[in-house]
Image (cartoon, rainbow over all chains, first blue to last red; front, side):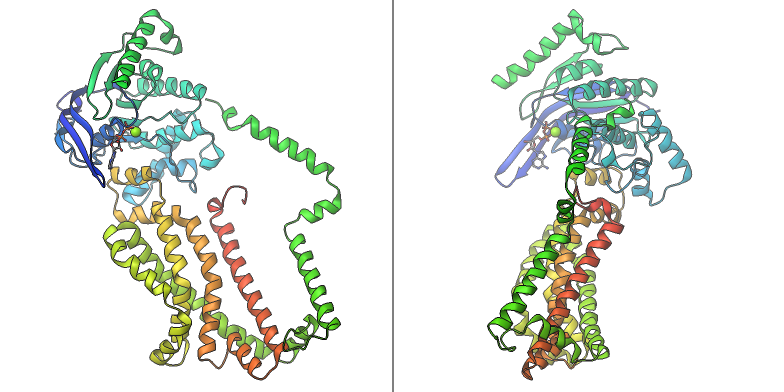
Length: 259
Length: 283
Ligand SMILES: Nc1ncnc2c1ncn2[C@@H]1O[C@H](COP(=O)(O)OP(=O)(O)O)[C@@H](O)[C@H]1O
Ligand SMILES: [Mg+2]
């Protein structure tokens, strides 16, 4: 356990990219702290810097301004206790599901032990893919492939899970089911989750707290607690207070787009 | 979620309609649909027209020998001599091909990983590729003397470029997410190459390998035109200079067969060892 209960903190973070045709400011003056085991969704229009926020947290890039800290320590390089789930599952097409899940260990250390494999099989079971260990990714549906992507991220048992629009490539029904499934996993083994999405219902269903980003350069224009207690399922979205909450989020997003 | 997710209803439907269609197809049409049958028929027809045409118009054999005369050309040389010539060409082609592969791989890794290297060396590679190798071949022979070495170098110069280009393209085509995954794990950089980039480049590498294997045969033949005392290329040149055209044509047929067999070997190797790298529908 870390000394501080802050899992992630951004202080006056700005990110500017130099491109061939000039510079693009993706994030500007982002200050926010995320507590341990908090499930935070980030909502915002595309291109506003959501993925950049996630990459900064993962230590894949350094901010041009300000500091990003994880468990009280400034992030200067990727950490072992942070896992990433990408928008597309991007599995290795030649490796079966089990090999895909143990891939982080094979890749980092160059070898895989029997314990690693046993643990991988246990995680594959928790994401609901028992019996598919020896299948190739191409034999699985999109939803199942993304479960493998989640299993791969969970395999090194990270304290922080970063998810970049993980369900946006899935059809609506699968997407809802995956959301509920993610909540189940999160409740069984609490982690700090930074979940990027541009779906209001998804954010409202899953998160404790929602950060709304403005159009580029991304600034935090709202930081809201989700009003409904857990455990939640799809029906939680139909209560009047959640309808009002969703409407509020929508107006925040629309106002930004009009501006 | 349940296993039912794997069963895509749309797919199930198409396979069942296909099954029904297959049952109704008459046998003659089924035969025609087999991949080898149609080209074989075309080929036989061409042979018949060729044979009939050369006989009908009494075409002299130095212009175009009839297929039957070419067949005779095979017999004018002993099987042992043929094997010697085939082996001489095949050896140079295969060594040149292997050298191309071994040299292209690190070049491609360098080009794909470093913008500096690619800026510095890519134009140079294009220049080498643009040099008409046939014109340089005599120089190379003079510099490197007799033996396989100059022939291997000529073969290499003709066959390496498609390999470098396809490997570089493949190494750069890796999904960026996996590169980020690799970086987020702080894995050693060589494993990013061996465990992610190279396997993802496999389909590209194989398309380059298929082009290069045929170019290697061309390279070996070109080198024999310049200086050799053995090999199918040498044999063709020697036969034409003696006006033994059917024999030269027989050599040509052997070269074509050699190229086709080598090409197929590369395709089969991909199918056996890297089945996942085949385009969808070819598995
Ligand atoms: N490595 C980079 N180089 C240059 N520009 C970048 C880079 N990464 C992101 N950007 C730019 O920064 C902006 C925000 O990108 P991103 O964080 O991916 O947005 P989002 O995930 O919200 O869609 C975009 O305009 C994008 O083009
Ligand atoms: Mg993004």
